[in-house]
Image (cartoon, rainbow, N blue to C red; front, side, top):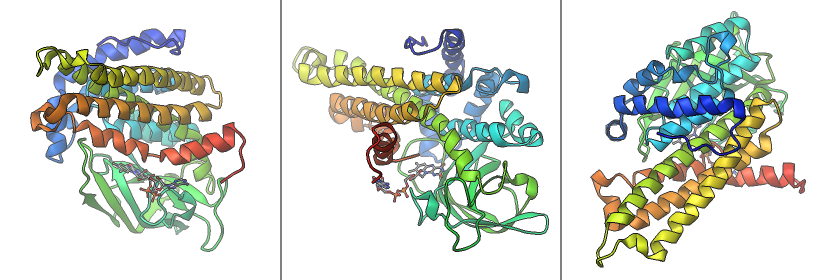
Length: 392
Ligand SMILES: Cc1cc2nc3c(=O)[nH]c(=O)nc-3n(C[C@H](O)[C@H](O)[C@H](O)COP(=O)(O)OP(=O)(O)OC[C@H]3O[C@@H](n4cnc5c(N)ncnc54)[C@H](O)[C@@H]3O)c2cc1C
């Protein structure tokens, strides 16, 4: 697979990004789209995909060389996710693990980095991420899961929902309330960020039946008097939400790459079909009503891709990439949705045939208008932080 890189990829990253795209060919041979889809339909797992990522050394990308990784920063992570999604095999747990290990790398102790970041390179540590709760939803300041001091650490009680890959992960990066009951929560007070072993007594998982086509399942997770050691806390007590927010740009960018990769995959299928299908004797792609939506989606995705790699470069340079990362997620998810919609329309009734595997792309992209953060909240962020409009 060729990377066909946008000019926003930094000069020093070009070789790495190209090598990532080539490495994904090997991953695809071990875990093709057909297997990804079969596993998704069987509500299975993506164990072989994970093994292939380790084999191709792709899990080392994004971890600094001094920790035994391959470097490459967020640009590298973005390339891994985009290349896998272009091949139709994007692992959600990859995004969650790479985002979670970044939070630990930035704010964790040396021992926590040794225990939780370095083992991700060999695939021995997979980390899911728990912020969403049934009542609080988008409003994290209303979350109810608590972590109270206990004899040797903290006692956790509460519930999370929609936690992806919790059955395949061994640890969860968990946001919980450490402030006493009734005390208001702010960005810089009242939250703790914890790395919790999912095998700890008192943790129970309940699989949700979700209508989408990925090998990761979603879970409700119940925490009932779960005792965790004090070294499960990342950084300082109280600052958990602040830590999380400063790493969320990474998640926004890798999710944009996921959307754009799958959008590209959908567009490729549509273009192939539009050249072949000829119910009136000439290929349907010769009709502008068919060709223009595909062309528009291509142009929108290219623009979003440039913003995505530019946001990644800004993050890697240590700049505040918040505005660009949010724009990348907004534009990427919308452009990819246009591509998938156009691909469905182009395929006509065939889009719904089991083997054609086109309508299967729709929930994967549609959900990205809502998760991991809804696009309305991103528009509010841009309105308030970039345009300096009054807070809604
Ligand atoms: C497949 C899938 C995987 C997920 N994986 C994870 C995971 O691994 N870990 C995790 O913690 N969570 C996960 N989530 C949860 C996801 O992040 C939430 O669904 C998302 O944040 C929205 O929260 P909610 O569903 O409670 O929607 P609500 O907060 O109830 O919002 C509903 C709708 O109201 C609108 N809305 C909400 N707030 C605002 C606002 N401030 N301004 C304007 N409009 C607004 C939006 O249109 C939104 O879609 C996952 C969800 C799905 C569907």
